[in-house]
Length: 159
Figure 1 (cartoon, rainbow, N blue to C red):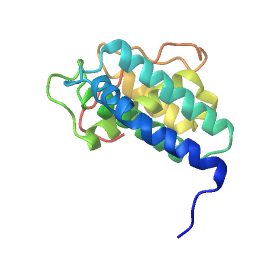
Figure 2: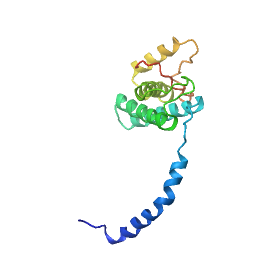
Figure 3: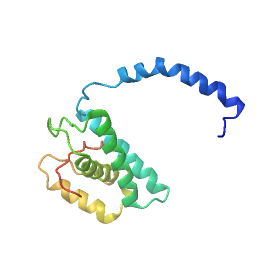
Figure 4: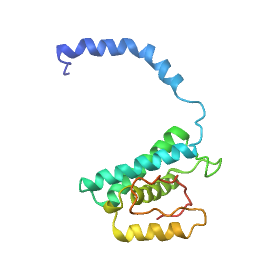
């Protein structure tokens, strides 16, 4: 059996003594019933996903991989913080797969708005065409990177 080096033993013992004090605080901090993600929260999550796509692309990451990671991150946040529920979608929580699809779509739309030069041209074109076909949607202008990103809406369809 390998023992911890001497400098780490006091730290480990201190942590063991603090556990009974900290554990109840962690349990109390967790909400009993997570509130659905509001429109403002979804706008924030979409913007975060878009910025992550832009940063990853600037670092040389493939577009699909960058979007997948950003979308998965947001899906996990919505699942963990809001139990999969989104006010704009309705009272029923979405499955993780539905959250993934919606979050990936939002990450793509947001990236087209925030950093269109980091998004493949065919994707920019498809996003702009898709948004034009929606009656109440604002089409992202590839020349205005500071446009506000829309909220994620899952339709149950992939991109």
